[in-house]
Image (tube, rainbow, N blue to C red; front, side):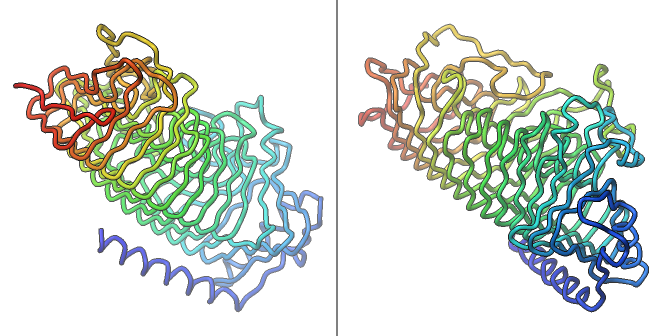
Length: 488
């Protein structure tokens, strides 16, 4: 991890030097025929092309309101939005180019900014610099444009810019290396599938001090290409999302490793805050999540090892067969996860399903997970007899926690997992709940130390155990009373 941080620091120094070098050559879009409130695609593209042909420089958008269709960014271009600039995406789908893409969904072929095979690109702004995709014009279109689609490129920097109202996903990176996102604000709630930032098979990424308010996944790492998604740092971000503040998956055919999320605030996340999902035969290894505040979140932490087995090998571009699972595709792995220093005021649209959940599948285990220094306040109100409740395995189903239905415990559900450590944990209830605090099934070598649990009035079972060999309890209490080590 230290080597990872050093490499990232060197990257930022290089990107900063790039931006400084670009100051020497200026290409003002007004000089190429751009006009406020008039569609100026050709003029802005001409400025970009001239900058690229000059070797490097700044394409300047001066104060004003401009409209454009698809723009093709190129190497060594610094796109500079001055204070008071709003760049609007055209409201006419005909102004968006069809860029080559092999995919299962046609809207992937249109975007406002397209980059492929380029390097050394920066997009910077001032406090009131905005890119507005006007996605509300495309609510019923099957070809809703993204704002940014950046592929097979390196040394990309976004800084101090607001992007909003995309037709679909807002910012997508595929197979890119060396990405820096600093003080980027994303407001994307105009359509369904309004993701914030997506990184598919990307490496050496730093996301710092960003603010995201989105309808779908806010910061989402994917692995649908034969290239690892690795060395990812997320720090100091404030995030609200309808579906997930941070999500790893669902596309998970390859490798995720060396992921760090720290010092963030996740709020108003109705369907979940943190999701680590391995369902397509890849690998998740070495994820470190720390110093996170959760507020008004349902399903705060969801770890899922499943066997959907979607096949992405036909193309490097997210092509898969939705209906046919390839023979012999292995189940993946999810291991070495640290989750520490988390506080949470949790809320659920259905209070019986919204606890922390770790679940593998029979014969395939989530491994080596540590939860430490955790303080979660649950809303309660799970009023049911869980003695005979069977939570479905749903091995091949899309991995959404709510699909499992009511859980056997209000706080933490662990199934098909090995080597899980819980240390310095507090679970409290704001309303009555008739369920135990923790459920363990096929949970091997779990250790609970300094764990304080609150139970609803009249509830005397803190732990519901269904096969937990090598379970060890040390200073575990429920309503102030010691929970005894189970026999056997």
